[in-house]
Image (tube, rainbow over all chains, first blue to last red; front, top):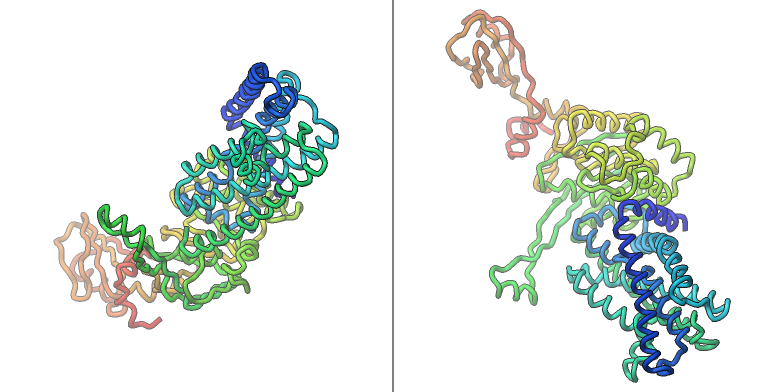
Length: 264
Length: 332
């Protein structure tokens, strides 16, 4: 745990350096929150009652999904892995008495905690003040949302870790990452809630791991999921988390074996 | 401390075929060639030694160090570092060693030096008292406080290496690997790092393996040297011994009272002539300097003279060039 906090502390030191990145992200999120709100208002004016939720719920869903954007999209571990292996600096990572997967998790989580306090919580506050974001349906739903969001974060991390591992084999990170982000934005329910997807597309979206990131926590927050449905959704998140952890460790061990037999 | 027996490392490389069709074929059936980087080397380093490990580029120095660190798996042979087999117990091994690679930093690029050291403290679980003690020590020896709040990417090379040394020693490793730790550093900073290396070896009894291209490092710092070339260890012994063994040739520098024409002696060849000074090379086992001086002074009056020992650099050059000959017969 100390290592996680140590990495978070480091991120605070980087802020002074990446001021531009910080303000760009913050202003983008504000614009996105503003836009999504007006998109739903416009759609509801045209077709009230066509979206399976009240306008307030939909605005809350949309604004919150933009506010938590920086929990997931961080150009994080997959780029770090590709850069370290290409430059040979992976040697230095392996020289530390840390399991590489754990090291990356600590590093990424440290940075996430930093973004949580410096970007995400302020964005949520702005959502309440200016963009019509409502408090959680019930206090319990708020707690369940936080838990589901954290599991969602872990699922997201492992997807990126796997992506980074695959990129070490294909030697190309950018195109893979682009495809991944496109799929993620769509199938996670960040832009369009997945209950609006028609037939087979909806089934696909509900089976893929991506919904663990946005759809599950947001549906809990807005009260669209209740009781047993929450348990099922979180259960599916946990299933994917377990599967991805195992897959990540298996895949990475193979890659590490290759790195230390080939010399990077 | 370190025991290496018949260690071999071969790299597999894909043989590239020429042209477009060749590249396509490589996609489906690749042919490999094996390149030996380290070829059947054996050595032993005892606790408290400070060993220089030298050899030309590509000789296998870094490959051996990586294997000792456990981040590269040997093809065959045995390594034991303080009782551990590095690549099998990588994480355990990294706790007992420290390493500095001159070409790569272990520190985090964007954060101040002191923050990097704090993270090292947390990763290696260094107790607070030991952390403070070591930090004070590094302040004394490396003047760390001068730049401890500067981000690593803004440090000069000399400062960065000082910070890297501090990071590598924070957890009190018994063993330190230094892979070209002074490459590109200016004379003053070099001297400082050399003193530091000697001090921690002497005062803290840290065993050190140092690779370098700078023979001055070797002469000033190391008590023992190992020379590796083409994956083989071609010499392992003390500095004095290498001089005896390979440095058969001495040079006599004579300054005459006035300019004299070039001449040569039966047992000494004239190698250089400059103004009133002349350099004669002779084999010290065949010719004694006193006979030579007597012979020369009988020809012309001498103003001053000196006998030059061979530079260690020159000896190493002859070894690299594969002409160890003129000394091998004296036995190893």
